[in-house]
Image (cartoon, rainbow, N blue to C red; front, side):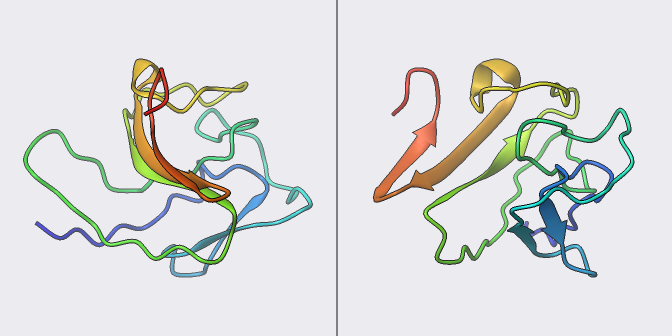
Amino acid sequence: SLVSLTLDPETAHPRLVLSEDGKRVRWEDTRQPLPDNPKRFDSSRCVLGCQGFTGGRHYWEVEVGDGEAWAVGVAKESVRRKGRISVNPKVGIWAVGQCGSQYQALTSPTV
């Protein structure tokens, strides 16, 4: 089923700025003065959705801007939030993305 996701500001890396409605995110060159909390990503540029899933089939439609690097995917709720993490299934993140002119599944090894 098509899911309307809202991004969780409590999890957003300090350089990710969310829209008021929580539907859009953009990168800022400077860190926002946000309170640290156990849910917030402090090193990896990530943000999680407010909604969670335990089963079933779900999909969402995403629009990406003209940036040269982005990734979108799903993550386990238990994914580590502190320190650098590699975006791949071994750590509980399944994602696809673009880096420059290359599109890829973010796996280990890279596909």
